[in-house]
Amino acid sequence: MFASNLLLLLAIILPLASLLLALRPAWQQAYRYCLPVLPLPALLAGLTLGPGASLELPGLLLGGLWGLDELRQVFLVLTATLWLAAGAFAVGYLKVHYLRRFCVFWALTLAGNLGLVMALDTASFYSFFALMTFAGYGLVVHEGTGEANHAGRVYLAMAVVGEMAILSGLLMAAQQAGSGLLADLPAAVAEADRRWLIMFLLLAGFGVKAGLPLLHFWLPLAHPVAPTPASAVLSGAMIKAGLLGWLVTLPFGEVSLPGWGNALVILGAVGSLGGAVLGVRQRRPKTVLAYSSISQMGLMTLMVGAALANAEYAAPLFAVMALYVLHHGLAKGSLFLSTAMALPFSRSGQWLVWLLIALPGLSLAGLPFTSGAASKLAMKELLKPDSLEFAMAPYLPMLMSAGAVATMVLVWRFLWVQRADARVGGNPAFMWLGWAMATAASLVLFWWLPWHPAVPEKAWLATMVHEAWSLFWPILAATVIAALAWRSVKQR
Image (cartoon, rainbow, N blue to C red; front, side, top):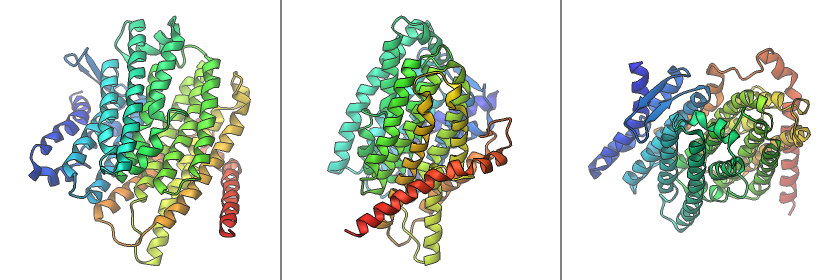
């Protein structure tokens, strides 16, 4: 009990305590080397503490309660792993200019991101969410360019609107529940007289962070201008906070809401396909990846809509969404870090680096025998039209296939613009280390963790072999589309 409480407490205290290193300019180099250490307690908590671990803090705000359940455990492992890899990368990436300022905002954003994942009470959850959001502004504008400042203004304006909606929705839900615990909110929202208003506020507020269509405008502006390690955590971990907000506050499993489910499926489809259409027109690697994140969050929104429409499918869909979040966050973090990597001088080394860059992208598209394939098969198994009862259910297979094609088209576009943007040279050792950690985690961690991605009653390897063609044909179709587009451009 003491060890688990200590880990949960250190997960937040260590990043906040590191701010003491910012008090003196002479300590900023030491602060730089502390960045990879800050998420370690949270990672240990996620890997060693089982669901049910909790820490009561009666003197905190209205009485704090932090802990883990099965959903939060997956989110915590993803968040801590990605911040660890990006922190190691940042040690080699950062210049002395504005170093101390970057470290301060990095630590504050990290504390908020980890805290909201572990928060079980409403006050702690909102406080950490707001800390992450507003401290993240400092990472977006870090470079101080005109483009960064413009992106920061858009980010901040939308963040304020989102936070106001979240706070209003949480206060209304908590008043209805008569409780400050997040676990009591879904049932209270389901029974509320103004359920539609509470749900609208929570969907819109968290939708700003999750990149929901019409609320996504900050994302393709902020991600490209932020320092590369910040871009990795913005896209890989922080936008998932919006999804987590939906999952812990909306009335999943309490009542079936086909109207809301249909609306979210439509929004998810627009995000998935619209993000791809806009992404293939971009010329900068990080901007392509930003639109790819919008597209992938659209697929996750499809699952959120299905879970809202059919209450009995909420619990299994939560498990699939958690696996999808883990897969996407690690893969996208690796891809963002790769945008700052210089290729080695040797031709054989360049081929190896390109292969390692491409693999997480191919995993996003669902390449057989990758974490992306496992996530997509689990998603496909649950979202069978004959199992669901709402208007958009018959269209889910088509939308998922179209999303897979769109993802692969974006992967090809990213590799193309990354090739044009690539340079040859050396990288600091910590940049190699951070990128290698993110890439290895993307390819291996999903399989090593004790959450089995397959449908329990089926043999996993046999399922993957049996469904290989359904996974491979969207990749093949996207490759044909990309080849035709390349040929058309070349002939101009």
